[in-house]
Structures are given as structure tokens and as C-alpha cells.
Image (cartoon, rainbow, N blue to C red; front, side, top):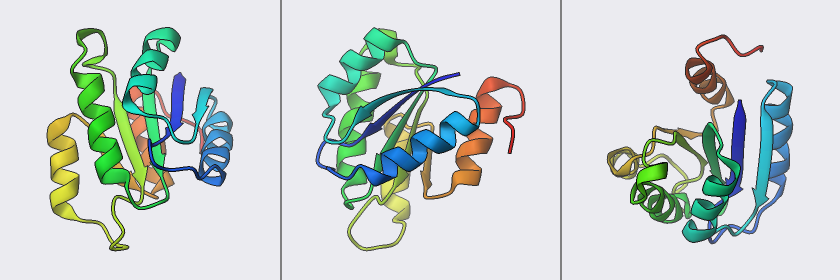
Length: 136
């Protein structure tokens, strides 16, 4: 399974992306890493170029809701990318806890999953997408 791994537009953190890349590679995924500070247009361009099976977005700076919403709306606006699975993890806001309204809006905009920092949930999501069990 090919994963496009990316930080969000305003997030310059990289340690989360390094960790996620290693985690995904240990699951047997091919990972294309875009790095930090990836805006919605660059994300869409990379999706067209690399044709991933899933997009994994990660945010540490607390602006995951805003940046994730822009990214998923951009992908859903393009017919060729409208069905591409998108997972958002990390911090959605600066409040420090999960905001159910934000999650609902992200899901309504087209995110397939909003996982926080739950790696078991990410593993489960990917296993369901692959229709086979991803090794633990």
C-alpha cells in the first residue's frame, strides 16, 4: 500500500513525520513523505503525481482542524482525487483535547478518519483499506 505522508500547511514539526514514516514502513507500506508545511495545492499536486492509496496528514502545532479542512476540501474538489482516502491525526486545536464539532466537520468535508494520536486506530484503518490484516 502506498501512503502519502504529509504535515499540514502551518505545521513545521518534523519529528512526528519521521515517527509516522517508520511506523508505516514497519507495517509494510511504501511511504512518500512530503515533509512539513504542505499547503493544499502542493498536496493535491503530489497526490496526482504519486497516486497514493491513502493520504495521512499529521499535525502537532494545534492547527490540524483548520489546515486539515482546507486540505481535504481541496482534494474533494478535484474529481480524480475525490475518493482518495484521507486520514488526519495529531492535534486538531490548541485547546489540548478533541473537539467533537471539529471532528464532525472534518468527516463531513470528506476526511475518512480523524484519529488523534491513536496508532492502533491508524493500523486498523489501513488494514481495512488493504482488506488484509496489517502486521502488528
